[in-house]
Image (cartoon, rainbow, N blue to C red; front, side, top):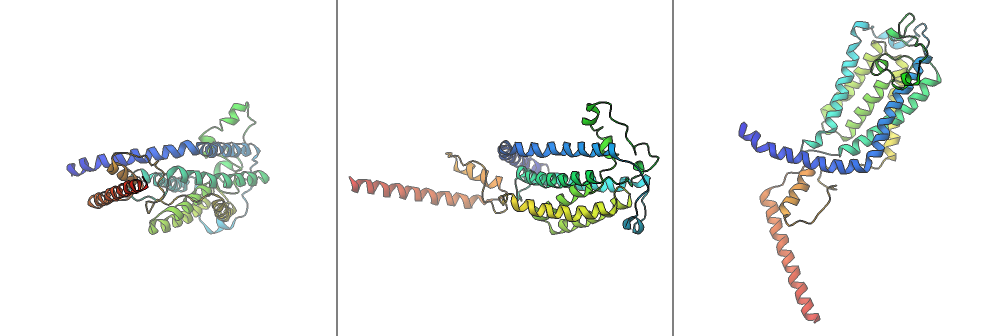
Length: 313
């Protein structure tokens, strides 16, 4: 076991270094788009905090989901958050698997550029929606008599800009239509459905998305309409935005490597780097044989070139 780890550890480290080098090159090209997507996450949080100042509690609206699903209760509200955290962290880890595994279909930087595009488009629509009409929050801290149901006017601009993170994000009110949790969940599931490789995990992801929807309603964090609107809105946003974005290169067959091709005397090292980058294993005897054949062709080509030159002279 120790011998195996000692033999594989250098290969893994080399693989991580090669992938990091390529991803950094892509990051230097795409960093502005990635930064814009991250900044919009803050803008989205700021907008959600702002609508909380406008929130006015009232009687909980009649809701079909509340009639069907039993209420989890305030003490079990963590259940839906726990599932969301699992989905969120699992997806992030999966997006970085090309750094470790041989099997890979995408570049992490390009994938996150796509994900942030989906999130920004969906969140922009969400901001417009929940500022258009403020509904009385169904969550326990948003109901009449709740300490956080009505926020006093901010004392300074700094108080607004800091959005009281993370407390202000967790215990917000008024940002209802449509569910932010479902935006992230559906964007992640749709992305894995397209770029993931395990059929069972794809099925499991959709099942978890449905369970997440039910738990959000059962914990009374959103009305059923907030979840329903998220389901068709996010799917449509991803469909149309995905059509506008350039398709990412497929690395599963080892084609279109983004590692710069540099002439080097060590042909073996160069081919190993390309194969390692794209996740393909190469038989040592096979590529050595190809090198010998290529060398012979090169010699023949030089010989023909010499004869042609002599005849021309």
